Image 1 (cartoon, rainbow, N blue to C red):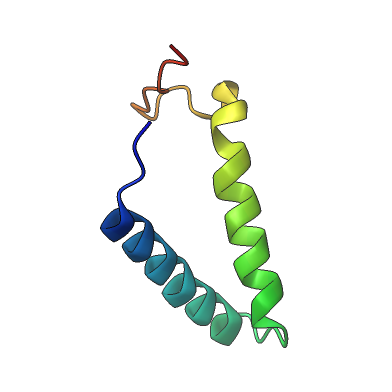
Image 2: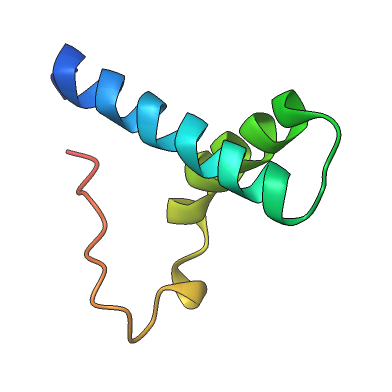
Length: 63
């Protein structure tokens, strides 16, 4: 899999914006924790296909 720097940058930027919104909405003191939680959720999401049923998500092949 080839890593596209622009895609990685925009993914990170979106994560930071979402973390900022969640931090403000739920009055969470530690934005770094929110960033960590979002990244953890994103990185583990493909490992739980039963949560993706009906979402139209197609996992990447490992080959």
